[in-house]
Amino acid sequence: MDQLTITDERTGKTYKLPIVDGTIRALDLRQIRVDDKDFGLMAYDPAFMNTASCRSSVTYLDGDAGILRYRGYPIEQLAEKCTYLEVAWLLLFGELPNKQQLDGWEKEVGHHTLIHENVKQIIDAFRYDAHPMGILIGVCAALSTLYKDASDVKSAQLRRLQMVRLIGKMPTIAAFAYRHSLGQRVTYPDNRASYTGNFLKMLFDVGGDWQSHPVLERALEILFILHADHEQNCSTNAMRAVTSSQVDPFSGVAAATAALYGPLHGGANEAVLKMLAEIGSVAKVPEFIKSVKAGERRLMGFGHRVYKNYDPRARIIKECAYKVFEVTGKNPLLEIALELERIALQDAYFVDRKLYPNVDFYSGLIYQAMGFPTEMFPVLFAIPRTAGWLAQWDEQTRDPETKIARPRQIYCGAAKRDVPPLVGRG
Ligand code: SDX
Image (tube, rainbow, N blue to C red; front, side, top):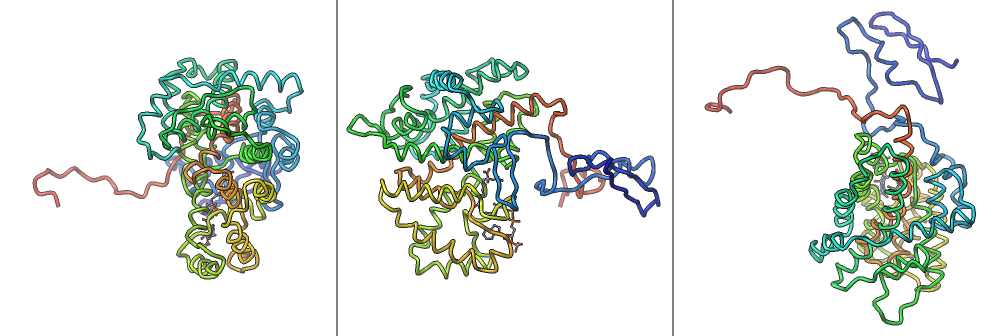
């Protein structure tokens, strides 16, 4: 048995802690105390920089080698050979579907693309200029009031029903929110189309001669596959923490969507486009890089908590961008992005900090070229990530080690003191 021997120099006592899967159990530290009144040692790890919160078999990352696998399959192969719904099945059920399973899955998800008209009225109640991520958060939470069977999280059959409902309805909610922002009537789902084809149709087909383009449909499939899961990222951690109280998955996805909304996480793709537009030209890139190195700005779309190498997704997205631009015309901001990358990959400030392009650096350029407004970019992250959040939720619900998430703290506040009378307080 691998083990760690610790000597507490306060008492001279020695402890042997088992090492399992490269970790020690934090609870094993509690036996290390100076006397019986002592609570025992804890691990202090703000932002969980070095803490495993769970066991998971969904996604494997190797940040140094730039490896990403879903259920053991390399992301490069999944992006090349699969559809998004195939990958969603893989994440949720652990294996790639066979033809019969996939056909049934596509029909099952297609059967749940409609949203209740009450839900559409909730979308319509938002201001026309409400950020679509705010609408998505609100509507996901509202769905929990519609599907009362969602609170029975112990039922595998009901968990599967909520998974299908959410995967089916997220594109519809997103498209209806987009149309609401334009003041346009909605286009209802067309289940004869592919998952992304139906989504693009609900977004852009206003009854004229719009036709879905196979290259753009496929590009969105690839982007959805790349965004489907990513181990214990911030929004997945939110999903796990919130649903550890056994609340329904709609409320959990609302919380996860809220976490993804932040500019350091899923909001980064929107922030990248704003950054590129603000730089404005290739000539101004050196000046911007200077401001980043001076600590005045962040190079959005660069850096990652896990990847200390090129994000494998960014490489695939960059290749995908060229295919999209052949159809849509090149995004003029691409040259600025390429110059930023060229400089950053050779500049010691970025190299020393192991800052490389991440999934968000190029994705926004594709979305913009496809006609999406920047506010929709994080929504295009939330839709595919729903499969990952649900896979992680289902795994947690089945994990016998799962308990309600309730971290401890180091108290650094005031010592005991008495309440002074209101009159005369400072
Ligand atoms: C996603 O976790 C996931 O898996 C997330 C995700 C997923 O699929 O779910 O991959 C999706 O969220 C991708 C990341 C998108 N965010 C951005 O592109 C925003 C810009 N990047 C960062 O702010 C930052 O890199 C983070 C938030 C992604 C990671 O931050 P960390 O791990 O907490 O690192 P840090 O902030 O402590 O930075 C370490 C050093 C610091 O310098 P020093 O203080 O040591 O001098 O690197 C610097 C930071 O200032 N740094 C950057 C930088 N990112 C880190 N400097 C300039 N530009 C950046 N982008």
